[in-house]
Image 1 (cartoon, rainbow, N blue to C red):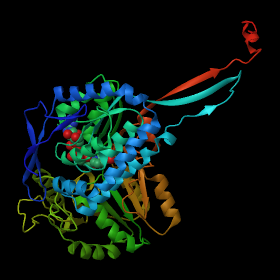
Image 2 (cartoon, helix red, strand yellow; image 1 turned 90 degrees about the horizontal axis):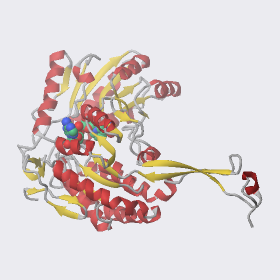
Image 3 (cartoon, rainbow, N blue to C red; image 1 turned 90 degrees about the vertical axis):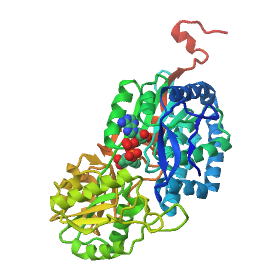
Image 4 (spheres, protein in one colour; image 1 turned 180 degrees about the horizontal axis):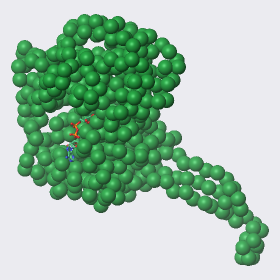
Length: 499
Ligand code: NAD
């Protein structure tokens, strides 16, 4: 792939953006610039929204069973092209191939769910609630919906949004991260092959200006956002004040609690895959492990031994390291800044990922797995979202202390407990206040039929992505009260009996 300028897809045509500023998309494994992503603005976004608005009436009037057929075709194409989509994702993001395939499969599961939209969108009926009046609820699409997505799951997170919105009868404008636009371009090609009518799905690029245009555009009825907490807060407030529905998922700081009776055979592999999978660039990654009652004595030696065996390397050429690079040199520098802060604040740096390189790719954005212990709850590394392969281990005396620490975090995405005790697991499940809880599982990220249920500063809005909530978000409900007059009943209204 050369240094091409990314095209937009508007009203069924690939087109150049009007923008004259560009973001350099890099191969994270080598640091090489591989494409220019236009920093689109008002004219580009307005054109995309106009195309989506024009396509809406006909698409909304297309029977849901027919809309689902387009999704079936798209699902088959995604399955067939999983490998080439994964290759693009590995290139622009730096994920390993199994991570890329896993991510894409998670996106595909949402498309699978949407193929069942005729079942999922059904309303309720209740006959004769008094006076012969029958009740019925029917769900209708909203109009043009917009999706704004982060760099870290370019193959999955857009699929949390547009397949659901489109299957419900809406039309869609997607604005992927300027850092990872190429995966979106590849799946847009598959949307074209699936035959969706022009204007149903549109792709624009860009960053703040493109987003701001979507947030205030009168024809955009709903905004779905996933990204960092400050931007999520801004999106929620700005879109809501402009009269739109909003679901805005933000950042995270996730915890594992390891009890003294924890099943060690699960603890160590789960910490490794959760903390260091996708180079720690996951909103569900574990950042803090809380060792209760001295459990660290059992799992730490095993964890360190496993980490020391991990391989780090390039992911753009089909090789299979355990971990790839992070997204950019700036992001790596930010992660390194947190490692320096941890050392300064007094934590013990047991494994230091700084300075790791891939021999054949010296300019790639590498940083190895990093582990601190002796971390106090008030340290910056225990509180801030680092979004890299940095794990903090905190020691506490009791499950209660661990729950109190987790609940004091402003974030509320995920927490897991490792224990063989039913009462401890039950206490954890009911008292801990992130919205996604795991009991002896690695990453408690729900599959498509359950909502991705962040709380607190990890989510702003009412209806989450995925599951039934996603369908409620992209539809509005009408309640119809109907009375059909039967022979003789007209007399009740003084209208005569008719003939
Ligand atoms: P980001 O907030 O920087 O960017 C997300 C999107 O917002 C991008 O499309 C970007 O172009 C746009 N954007 C950035 N700054 C903006 C601004 N000032 N105004 C308007 N739009 C703006 O996030 P990122 O770095 O791409 O992604 C990483 C973050 O996403 C992490 O905080 C991570 O926890 C979070 N995330 C959350 C979830 C979740 O489900 N809660 C899932 C994945 C990632």
